[in-house]
Image (cartoon, rainbow, N blue to C red; front, side, top):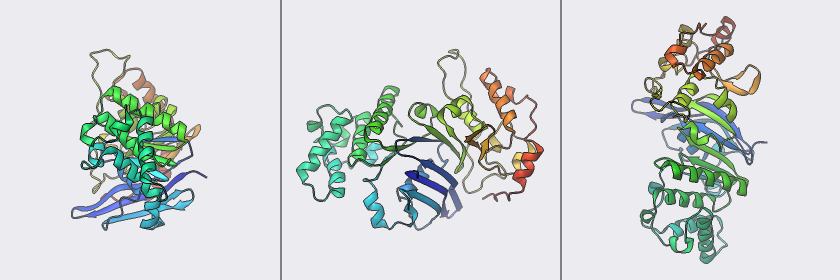
Length: 367
């Protein structure tokens, strides 16, 4: 049994403008000691899905369905008191902005010690402080006993992120969710933070879900990658497969926007055209079709489901193009052609059998 298993999770918010389908039916699982990367542009539903695991989206206007099984227990059915016992103890989260997440009026050590004392009420204040100092040292903060008495604004961005990691790991959680842990950090500090998470994951034998918009961030740390677009997972595979044999045009776009060391210095990056769709009024058919260089008429009408790729049942993709066509396009892109050049390949828009199969399923209404 997986440590965390998310099944057909939907998180919709009722607003004055309409129903926002922030998360629209995603499923994934994470085993003990495994790292899953969830990747996608801003607004794709990554953070909302993780916050729902933590029980942080239980607002009056939220409509949540599906299952979130943690050690077999459905967190969606857990009471607020049960979630408070789990949060910060069995499941911990590193939030995007440590300066906003840390309280400016309290010393860093006090805030970490508070997290320890809440879940260990029989311990003393001195023991909680010692644990806070120990964790600050473990994440690489110099002179941790002295720096425990500093305020958040006295820490650099990288040190604040390390303090957040120390707080998250202070109770030895079984699952660590890292939401954009390297945002706004320079490249050197990013590498240090990722190395730290990977090392601590190994030491604590924790499962990790790392959320980011940058595929390069999860290249080394993640065992599997789920690519999200418009509230859904459009590709899910082992990390090597995502980087070396991706099967979805959106994944190709994300990979194409990463600078390459072996590319000429004057070579331009290839951005994904257009903007992410409104989660209130989603396009008909495939949600990515307005931005896809390889779109065909069938893609505007038929909503593809996440299905196994031919020859690899662990690799799933939601695309109407036939797998052989996708492989040809990816090979063409790898050869150095830009998307508009690869588009010139003879595409069939998906085999008749594949389109007919998807057409039997009722397409989701836009909006």
